Length: 120
Image (cartoon, rainbow, N blue to C red; front, side):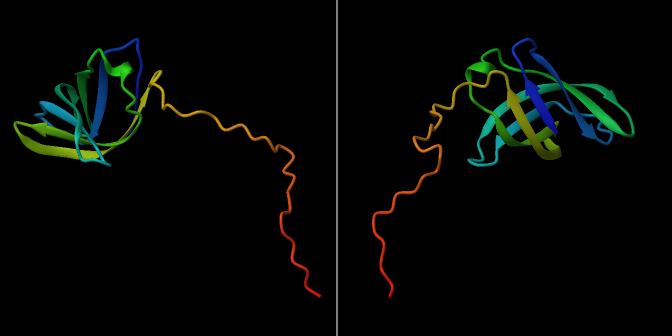
């Protein structure tokens, strides 16, 4: 699943496979450091035999953070884990990575030979 967080919305929908009658919290956990990035309350909007639609509100300072990446989501209901999986998070603008683009000074790929052995 992919979620795109942008600056125009604060309320987002999240869909789970299957029918769940109770869910009260969703957690996004970093797969690299195993630390929670978000731990948010959820509300069930729709639940049928095919899917469950959850709704949650993101913090207002979301776009100040650079959190793009792959995360594990964990959905809890009454303190019990009811679903888990992987989610790709995309933010707009997402913040700066602090890297500079590399501009080559050798665009023609000309090689310089510093040593050439002579095999005779």
